[in-house]
Image (cartoon, rainbow, N blue to C red; front, side, top):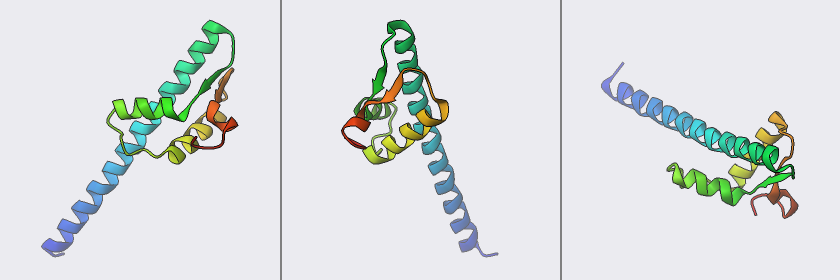
Length: 99
């Protein structure tokens, strides 16, 4: 083991940890949006649509400015399909992904 190998290993590990941290933060933003929409549905009774723009705004508030619309739409679709919250839909699906 050389010092260069140790340095590269630390840099690689730091990049892995940063990517995982970003993924978890983004997942929390998406879960918050779905939960909030579910609560609005329960209170109002009408189906509630979540837009990618709303979730991107929330992500930017949390410091995640580099989130792409396609990535966010994909994550939203996956989480909504997994959780199947009653009355909650991805509103952007009517116009196409990421719009």
